[in-house]
Structures are given as C-alpha cells and as structure tokens.
Image (cartoon, rainbow, N blue to C red; front, side, top):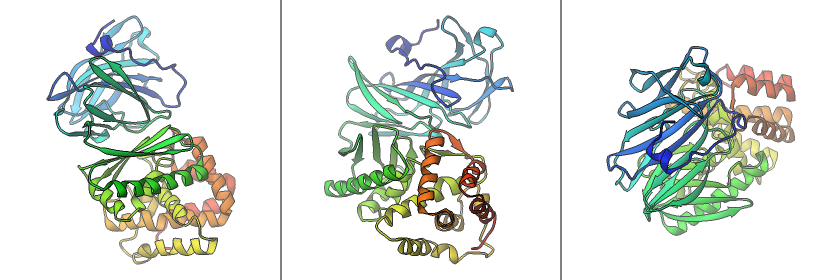
Length: 426
C-alpha cells in the first residue's frame, strides 16, 4: 500500500461504513510544521455510491499542488486519472477495476499555498483548501498536526493528543457537514471564556473587546442556546465555539463553530445582539438542518426561519398579541417595498445581492412563518419545528419537503404558505 509521511505518523480514523447518512466521508490530516509557505493536506474521500457519469467533480484551490492522487483498497492502490478542467474544478475518472468498485476511496496529498507563521490563518470552503464536493454533505474528520505553540479550531468536537514533539488536534462532527473551516492562531492570540450549558459548553474566543463585554456576550449566548435547545431539541455536539476573526464583517456559520468578524463582534459588545442570537439559532437550522443551496427557496428556509427563531427568542416573555405586534414591527421594512417594482417572490431569490432582497428575507420571511404558526397554533408550530429538526438534522431539506411536512400538519395552511411564497406584497 502506498505510504505518506502523515500516514506513517498517524493512523487515519477508521469509520464503520454505513453508519452515517451522508454519501461521502472526508478525512483530512493537515500539517503546519513542514513548510513556512504551505500547508500539507493528506486525506481521503470515501464515495459510498458510484457516480453514474463515471467521474467525480471536485473543487480545489487552483494554486494547490497535487502531489499524489490515487484510489485505494485495503490491499492495493491505483493512480487516479484527473483533469483540471477550469479554474478550481477537477474531474476525476472513476476506476473500472472491480476491486475498486464500492465504496470508492480516493486518497490525495496536497500542498496548499499559505504562510503558516502569520498570527492567524482562516480557511473555509471558499478557499478550496481541501477537495470540496460541489453538492451535498460529507461526514468529516480533521486531524491537524502542528507545533504546540499554535491553537487550532474547526468543525464539531475536539480532542488533543501529543505526538512528540508535535501536537495533534482531532475534530469530528457527529452529523454530516456542508463545509470544513480551519482556523490556526498563535497561542495567546485569543483571550477566552467558557460557560457550561447542561451537557454542553460554549466558549468565546476574542481579542478586540473587553473581558467584561465578553462575559456579557457569553451570558446572552448561553441564554439563547438554552432557549433554542428547549424549543427545538438536543444540540448535537459537546461544544459550541464562537471565534472572533479580523478578516471580514458579519458572521460565518459552521457546524459547531461560529466565526464573527471584529466589526460585528464590537457591535454585539455595544448591545446589538441580533446577529449573535441569529447565528446561534442557525446551529439548529442552517448548520444542523441544511437547506438545498441549488434549489428554490434556499434563503427563505435557511435565513428567514432563523430570523423567525431569533424573534421567538427576543419575544419569549411576550403574550401572543404582543409577539404578533413584534412580528408586525419587523415587517415594517418590507411594507415600504411591498408590491412595487423592487419586490420579488421570496422563493425566487437566488442570492441576496440587493438591499431589497435582504429586506424580503429578514422582514417578510419571518412574517410568513408566523402566518403558518398562527394557522396551526403555537403548540403545533413547536411540534412541527422539533419534528423537522429531528428528521432532517445532518441532512438537506428542500422547499417541497418542507411544505410536504407542513401539509401533514394542516394542508390548507401549507398551501396558503406555498401561494404566499410565490407572490409579492402581503
């Protein structure tokens, strides 16, 4: 069997095939210690089912050096034939040899250009730092081998092992994921504070805010986490990591990890908590239940519902009439464009690339969910949300599946929502 430096150093985690809902299993071992100019990435992708086209399409950083790529079984390996077709797209031909038929195990060794002596490295799906599957989810395991003066963050739950003189950080998600972020920082780059929440822990890592502000943010995060878990169901991981990053404004949501840009973190510290409680809600719907990115209604399902959950959290002490008033206050921004030439059906928004589309998503979308909740009753809505989370956690849900589940609760209410999704105005 072909050997690699990391394979010789570490045994890859063996996963009993068939235990997971995803069609692929991605295992990555990352080294930061061999070069100052690149990351070494060794990994495998297990394809549970062959592709009928006879090939796999992957997305990879066009500057990545592919040092090896091969299919393997327990006893043998053959070179993978691939072609860089354009930009970041790689097409890999499936082997025709019966021994490599199912599951197909694609192994690779990569050198990803990246200075590793910077104070902070942040890589995500968009950086294509590992072979990304264009569609669908993958069960993920990430091992990061580094010097002990570095801190590492990624998806799911973390364990750390000594591999003298280095350290290995292992990350594993209990549910399939859409993307695998990787953040590497010098020790003491971050200050941190943690809070236990039942069987879980929330840790906030920060650098630009005061310790007292961090404690206040952690208080809010803990309260929101408890609310969503009581409302929707048990959180899948032992820990939720909240990480301040300097490189962008806004938030970036991963499974078990939230990355918040410094400007947004400072706004949260100043009392603007909406983005914090919204992204925590997204751990259940957005990074727990995934929405079909290529299908209609993606933004309605992935963002409008999280905004509705945020409003539920903010209005948790209100009676039904006062909460309905809160929903109508949130609708005020949409009323200004309702039915005019800037309005568009929420189900047809492909990307929120205008102010008006953003308003439709965060202002009209939660109102539509509230209309459905009013139609079936608050108890029915809670039962529906819990069932949706239970059945689709770690899976992709489409708009048709969502409406079908709503129809089981009440067909008339579901059809009314379907009509509203395709219309403009109120």
